[in-house]
Image 1 (cartoon, rainbow, N blue to C red):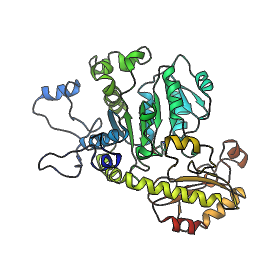
Image 2: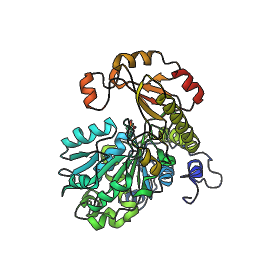
Image 3: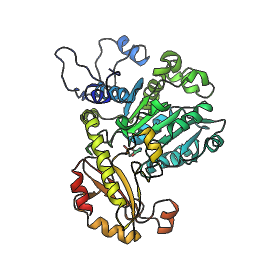
Image 4: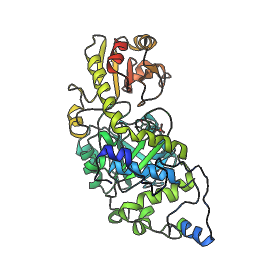
Length: 421
Ligand SMILES: *Cc1c(COP(=O)(O)O)cnc(C)c1O
């Protein structure tokens, strides 16, 4: 299946019904699964056989959809989580423990920044943030003996910086750790980070993958390319026996292509229980079936709105990697076919007041704390998500009070621009 083009994988990947079976992925709305003998079930618990016993760990509907996402990314194994936050936490915590250190791009989603810098710090996991524009020498300098992962976002939410994946992968591998890339904004239709050296990819499927603002969810995919055993001293969780699973060594038993996701399911999903509901997995799959048709339209609308805004006298600055003038355009040509996604941010002249009055005049776009769905939405961080901050604090954080983020939906671009004009 993975030789098929990306569009065919969107439509048909992950699930192939047998004779007389449902054409659409069935929703297995069951917490548990029945077995004839205790021995049958015992083999599942020992990870000697694969199968289902309790939906907190695994569910067939989720596995069909995870298999599709793994195919889309070109990976060896995948899993769904209840949210993008859970996906990033699991991906990092699967290789870290108390005393570990992470090197992360500073240009990432606010929720992930908090997760790493506040919550994971409480677990004894330390972080060094680096600029996505840092030189290889500067990136090298951020690594320590206890570094276990490097992390970044292909297109950062909301800064719209573009990650030089090859550079980050080269540095991570030089230090014997995997590069984990959150590929939420481009989706595998826009960029497949494994083709550039990333080892693990994560998603907030809540965004374009679902694409309709219907279901919160996340996903993790393993490329199967990282040789855990070659760095066994760094990754005891993958390379030494797990006493909570009868002494199984994941990298030995499940190999390079299966170890990461099996450990993540068997340990982290078992203990944290952030499973995606099968209903949501079904809705996510409906979104995935049209992802390759929708993404080009989001990019086209983003480009049209960015170009329009760049011509307006009342606009101080527009960030969109598809604009030739954008700082990241060169990198976007390499990794994203010169485009971006549907998200554009711009700064309006006149700061907070001007932004507030702009937001009041919106007709088609609505005010929402969301991005990446079919309907265009807008957010002014200074008067919403960041309203506790002063103009000075906002400027220091690189979020001017007049900054507006637009997530261009699937409407007709002429209507979008008409309404903004
Ligand atoms: C939204 C988002 C997340 C968090 O995802 P949730 O599904 O809201 O938990 C993580 N990373 C990126 C890039 C996001 O845009």
